[in-house]
Length: 185
Image (tube, rainbow, N blue to C red; front, top):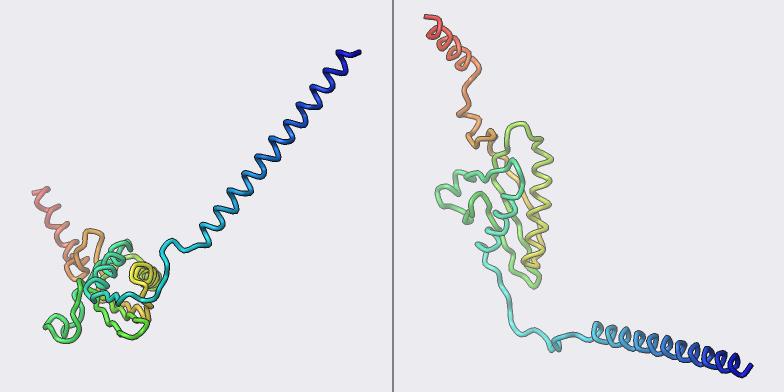
């Protein structure tokens, strides 16, 4: 009987020690969580106020807009208006013109001149392009995008040639007839 009592006491003491270990682990976890929360709530760098100004050049904004334009399938930059080709008005950045309003909160207006691949629905392409340019400019610059204007100035084929350079149906039919005649004769 004594042996049974000793075993029971040992088992009871083991259970007590296991409970203590579990409680200690819970306490450690709670302390770690409280420490993590305190670190997250505390800013890493003390904020004292503005240290200066950050201004982003129009050319940088134009380059970001051009990169966004290149991500949309079926879109190519176009040359822009005749005035911009002659060097009048605002500077063009590969089919993109930027208008920057320098205020306390800078605002950007983007004019894009594009050519769309034949067969695509132009309103859908324009919508995708507007959203992409707006999202990327706001993400990378922090500036507010006031407007993204899309000017579709042409249509091109998959190989990149403009619609004007495509062979007309009558020309291609004549060419096929001539080739067939050469083969027969």
